[in-house]
Amino acid sequence: MNTSIGKRLEQYTTKRPQEVLLVTVEVANEQDQIAIFKGFSSSLMHPTAFDPDVPVLTDEAIILSIDRIASPYNPEAPRYIQQGLSWEAMQVLLSEVGV
Image (cartoon, rainbow, N blue to C red):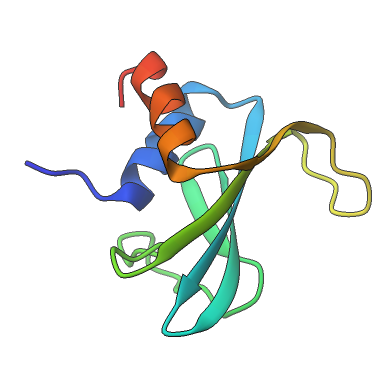
């Protein structure tokens, strides 16, 4: 079974609860930023469904960059661990934690 990108990123934050992922994506020629923390995703620019089974990060989304931020996340003063990761670079980190 092929696990979706969104689910894999959520699993990563479950295994690394000290991190918040800020994912910049493009869907249908529109940008969005998605925060992923402790296994949950939330759009910072669009409404997020109340049902956690409704994916925020769809398979149609094109990942533009991923920032790793130390939690707790403060949008006024984020503490970056790494900025501007590509999906390919993030896959290495996913493999390290087994997701």
